[in-house]
Length: 245
Image (cartoon, one colour):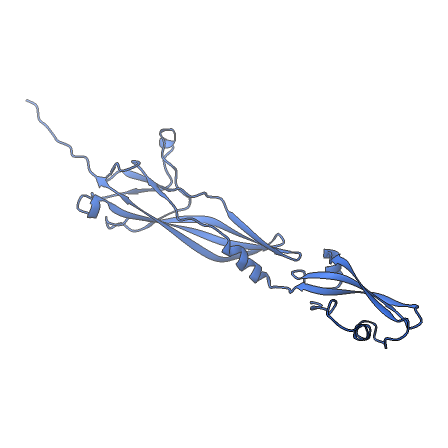
């Protein structure tokens, strides 16, 4: 429900203003006074059954009769900003989300080649925490949270299928080497015959978008993918078998 815009400050004659607000004929000592009481509070909005996403101003109108005597005083609400649907606020919050393309990492780091038939660690330089934006109008706040859920890796080039990691993967360091990685791929051939001598690699982070109205969860409403690219050289270790007399 919405009161709509009220003609509180329109350029009317005193007679027309009196007829509209007081419902009588303007004459003698009759008068109508409009006093601004401020922005309508959440309690007032709820009491009047207004849509809480609208913004309203409260005005007190006091009517005096032709004999100068008090007739009545009543509060009118003027709609400053029309109510909007929660989905509109959700779209505004979603538009401000910044989900960057992932930066890819792998072992060995840098330009050093991986080795066939050994585990190559992969990871994305992506924060694995929700990204949250909110939009408020009136007494309604809609929050949108983007949460990373998984990374789909396409190692390309060696005929292997894509693989999925449920986290960003572990950044390699000597300290975490023994614990191993949750996101690895084992190449079966070298990249020496590939353009630039390396396989193209992509990683796609799937973000799940959820929303809430004034803190009440509304569930998942969309997913967003962000893809990063890199190249990975893969070599092999040649072994020479010797014989001694």
